[in-house]
Image 1: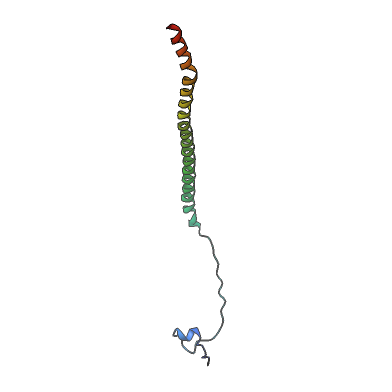
Image 2 (image 1 turned 90 degrees about the horizontal axis):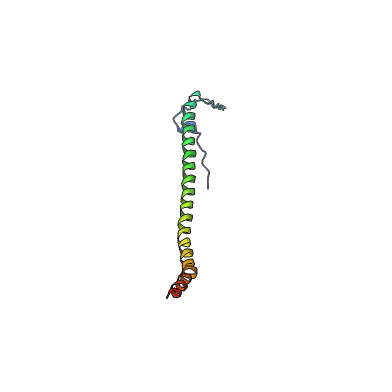
Length: 101
């Protein structure tokens, strides 16, 4: 397998063959533009809204948990009241009724 010589990139792009062959260093410098302050206020506003939404979510979660706990306690309280009436009040009322007869 014979290897073919590669053409330099400058020849394949249409540069003239007489273009001098030299190596150049490329130096870049990144400088922040002062116009980025305009986005800073919008970013702070978005972060404030996000935090406010998170507080609202936490408050709603706590309210729902308290509501569920109260809803769970209501039937238990009713069952306890029925057992108390059945086991203590009704026998006492029955004995009073039997004594009056």
